Length: 407
Image 1 (cartoon, helix red, strand yellow):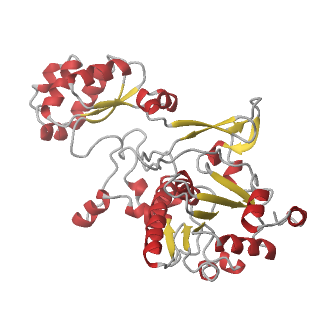
Image 2 (cartoon, helix red, strand yellow; image 1 turned 180 degrees about the vertical axis):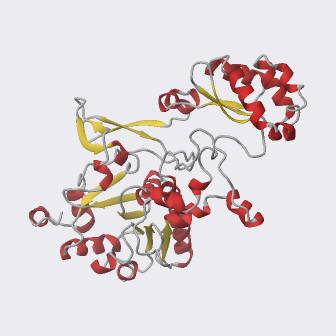
Image 3 (cartoon, one colour; image 1 turned 30 degrees about the horizontal axis):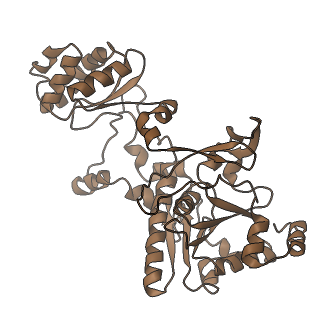
């Protein structure tokens, strides 16, 4: 039994931020019903290739992107623009602890599915809205996209190679980090609201915005600016105050990270590389000196690192006690002994007959561990089951709803 096996979640969200939050809840045991448009479903189902493959190795209609955020859920197709669809959502909300949605501000109010409307049928409901810019403010009505929010929220101003160097300029993250972090903050907020409800019997609405999250997650960069009044700059893979603390390309065209934290580690680094004299050079003997002479030192170190291959460097530096690590490709990540030991890759039987490979939850809990129980559902896979078990609909009524395009 998961920690949240007593919780029912009605998921009206799609794409990434909302589904990421509801997947967390599902991993922890919650019964999550994912409501999707008939015939289309979550936008990410079509964000491919690549796609999930069936038992014969043929592409299905489920994009890998969709698989990333929808395991352990059940899919119900429903036209919420219809009166019957709205009635079904309200009936399910009356039985739910949590509703999560990411429609534009005000859109669900037109259907009578906003927080004010649904708390009439479930007064202690926890209702989480996820938008680009929040429910208030001059940008509230705008659609929010992760890439744009990374720019507006300052992330790209501190991410990327330094101006003036090859490849210099602002850079987005390799994943939709504003979406993912909003999903994580939404999970925390939902859990806190449920705890408050259990103590007081009072539900509440949660207003999650991608921009708010993007600003908040800049952490010490925010406070560096607020304390000094000076905007932080981009440093690429280097560190503004420590040298060498960056990436280097190895002889086999691999990459390693070297994170020298003190002068003793620097000496060991250059000794392993066959250049011990660098540690005695007054320009490089101390960290303050290395920071001042960064532009002279780094090319010398880059040439030194080219002497050995990636695995050679990792072995030598680890033996010498120099903090280091490889920059792995994803095939290398999932072949890594620590990743394998932690069980981070999971194969789940898919409705197509194939196996859906997904990533396990990173939350490790001794009593109620999160489990990857079921593969991300196909579109409408559980519609009939949900309508029968939750609402008591018979086969005739379900058939009529399907004939009318409601489900």
